[in-house]
Image (cartoon, rainbow, N blue to C red; front, side, top):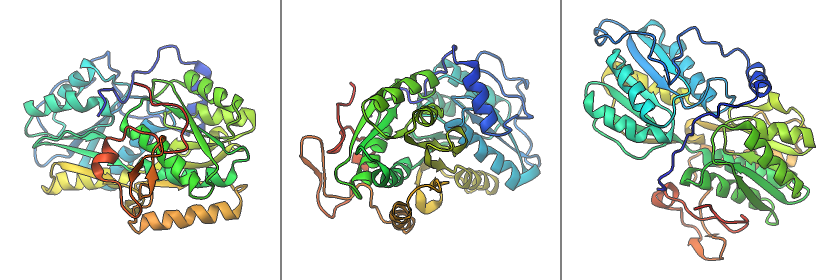
Length: 386
């Protein structure tokens, strides 16, 4: 796996207008609890672990703001679902805008010292800091999103976002007029490459003539860069866009220019009602509730969990009413197959850009290939950045 940080620090110069639009469109995300910024010491003073008779203290650490309209917002919705499901059996807190640096280790250590017995780190770059802290707090359960390293008291969880990308691709392939699709991409790590390939394969399954191009912005949350990337591709004739970044800037650019685009991680339809084709929405609630329940009843185990459409962890939701019925039907048929547990996304024959067969006909891609994907499928233009 490339040695890249998955979630980068927010840039200090984000436009006030963009932030205001995100907060307004996503609804009320005001949190009554204290959200600790990376530069500050958590508000609550370090304390001993809560007694067995008290609530289970559960903490969430976010790389972005809860009002980003995408990745972090989706995780925080999962946290709120935990509160609603367990009531006074749990006490949750969150720390937002924590960089993938020594700040992350400090925050994890502070939260463990404050008596939190289950701590979720929601981005790839938290893996090493969390692993280090987990060794020092063996009685605390740690869970890391999208990583690959575990420990006796540290588990890994992930969503098959590539299934959402594939379903979006089906709609893109059916609705494009130029046969040119575009992806605003963050970092060239296997997860993002998987999503670009899956989006392309979904489109090719209904329209073999499509091609896909990607513009890399080297950030997870930078609305200005995301908008520029989208505008560049629109200028090249791309008429359907998707992103693997956290803001709705791509959809907003599409709305402005009269082309189509998808929401990512959360329902982003409010940011571009006319341009919005659908949103690949992650639902973290089922996993978070299962993890909390297992911590409460003493059955928690380390290991790796990777859920998708079958487990209702990812969905292509809120499809625009203007999308032709034929396209909706094609997408729903694919979704039904995924819900049945059929591995249709990376089942061969699949060839890479050079025409080399990478997955034989009728065979499923091995987990090692999926987890370490470092090639583009045929139909994706350009090269993967080093």
